[in-house]
Image (tube, one colour):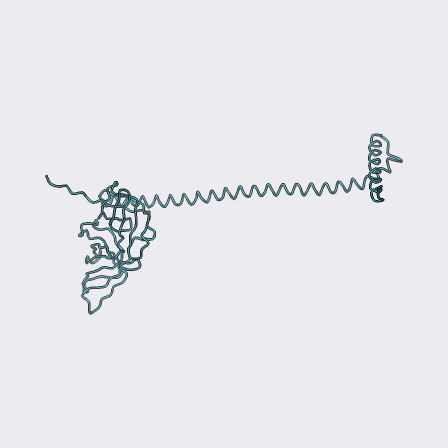
Length: 275
């Protein structure tokens, strides 16, 4: 047994259906609708208007949704292209900087008039007691213990250990290093040794010898290891004590060891045993 509400709904559906059929039949006649046709229009028109309005709203929402989805996809695509462009830009900048460094190394190799081996820095000793780096060239490339290492800014250090494909370089900032140096202005000589916190010291210069802050120190070539005239650093501070016969000279190296990436190794000339 149907409830009153169910009966009302069914009656309304039947009424709307009859009205639509009547409206459809009357629309085929060329003359204006009268009687049942006009009644059907009066019944159906509000529902059609409501349906058209809801349909318009849904169509707008649906179209706006697809538009937003399309915009989001386009935005993701543009962001990906931008990221790729940034990556290429950084890679190109890195290549340009590396090419400039290699060009300077090549120019330096020509200036010293000796065969040289270009090497890349691949490691650094983390110990605070030793100042060394590891490079990717070894015996197979003509590198041996005692080979001097330089870069376009100046002296880097000396090869102290070597394998077939790698070499360990002791920096001039290591306390165990020693380079015979000369003041480019006054021609005063001394020995450059490693100091503290990235500095070097110039030893064995008498207190009355002419040295000034800012003077440039270069290799003298007298040690038989480093080529003559290679820059080492500049004098940062001078202390002359009455109780000492030598000056205390602090030197700042020209080479920035924290940013060192490529170096030149000058292989030692092999001696030939007489027959």
